[in-house]
Amino acid sequence: MGLDTASVKPHERLSEALSQEMAAVNELIRARMASEHAPRIPEVTAHLVEAGGKRLRPMLTLAAARICGYEGDHHIRLAATVEFIHTATLLHDDVVDESAKRRGRPTANLLWDNKSSVLVGDYLFARSFQLMVETGSLRVLDILANASATIAEGEVLQLSVAQNLATNEEIYLKVIRGKTAALFSAATEAGGVIAGAPETQIKALFDYGDALGIAFQIVDDLLDYGGSSAATGKSIGDDFRERKLTLPVIKAVAAANDEERAFWTRVIEKGDQRDGDLEQALDLLHSHGALEATRIEALAWAARAKTALNAVPASDLREMLTDLADYVVARIS
Image (cartoon, rainbow, N blue to C red; front, top):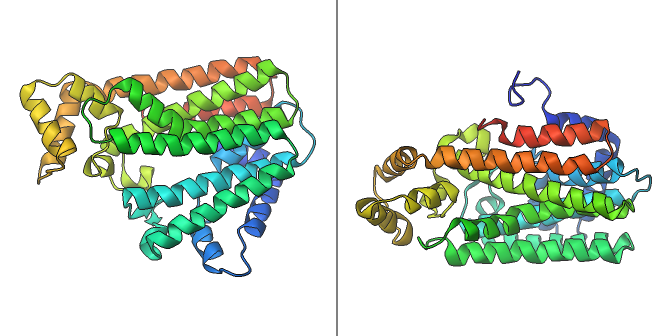
């Protein structure tokens, strides 16, 4: 049975194995997203936090710490920190992208307004730094502060290259390493650091998170052209309509003839999109094998993530993280 059709999925098994700690994380999140003076803060935050997300990033922090033998409770704070950073970036992303749907529900900026989304996101970033400091680890603070800066940098880089057909795969990798993989790798690395693990294990956990995050984003970009709305939680073709140069399009543009390049210039660079353009774009992606090439690349990053785990102690949790890497790409396997 494939991982995508298995009755209990890897992230669900991980959630079950970490259930007590995740309950403590959720309790801490609820306590810290409260605001005595601005009730809109918990309203907006709860809309996203309670929307049924997998809590993948905080679980990675908990699992990494546990794999390395950690027995304290600072990993609970770090897991909540990671979820706050993630939620803050989602609130900001939906404003930047003018999105109407997130996790299958209307976005916060649609239900409230852009100002609320931006300011509540800022509040959550501030809360995340308060939580980091409470661990007393300067190195953990450094890892998560760097990740926060890298995420913002990746988003700004994406803005500046998004509609430029000169954007190549190297630039794309920088963008997704910033906006997605940076938080995955910080989540796993911080777990190893708080556990006082050997440097080889900390590096392995970083490499796992980095490769997993890259695979995760490539799959997300691929599903935008070939998934279902139920699978992605957003509308199919959103990236095309938002004129994002994701990996499938970058590959198709690189192989395009003059006529095809003129099409991409019109719909992506100039934003002149008409009826039937999405279907034409899909035809070009298929004819140049761009979707298949993107799929192969996602599988390669998932394999790299699994290899990295060989350097950490064997355990049930390590096996779950290995299965998780397979699950991330199972929808396109």
